[in-house]
Amino acid sequence: MSPSPSQPPSGSLPSAANRHSALFTGMVLQQANMALMFLGKAPRPDTDQTTVDLEAASQFIDTLEMFEAKTQGNLTAAEAGLLRETLMTLRITFVEVAESNPAPPPPPTTGSAPTPDAPAASDRPPNTPDAAADAPAEDRKKFVKRY
Image 1 (cartoon, rainbow, N blue to C red):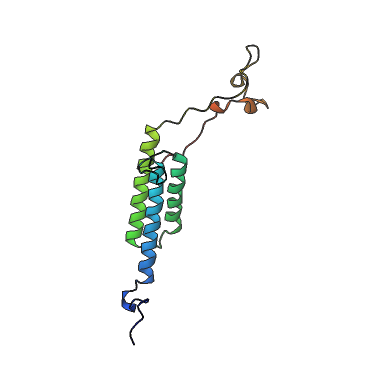
Image 2: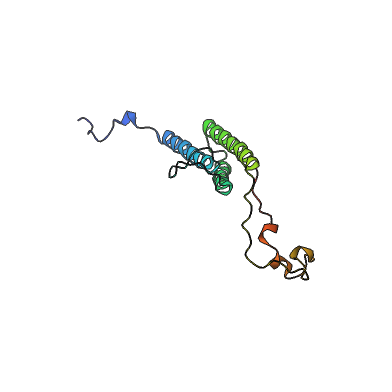
């Protein structure tokens, strides 16, 4: 009895280990491609334009770092090497893009400017209760993870 046309011969089926390795490689490359897209190194498929979104790129890099930590000791040498080299490349690219793209200026605040007789929020001691609430948004630092 010959195998049915819908089922390949049993000798041509990949082993579970090979299938898992291929899926792992695909997942790493997918995460890397998404990070590169948000780093402006690949065009977005919906607009065919390149954009830079460091926060989104950081999320994809962080996800790969998590995979590296959680799979430590469970990967083949080739899988571990792919993950390590991909992370190294993404980190270097992230730093290059972050240094070449300064943060956009904050939007202008809507509100009244301080009057000359009223002390500005930055003139108040930091321990006053309303100093933090009155501090303009542009005075607050925005931290970005650097690799």
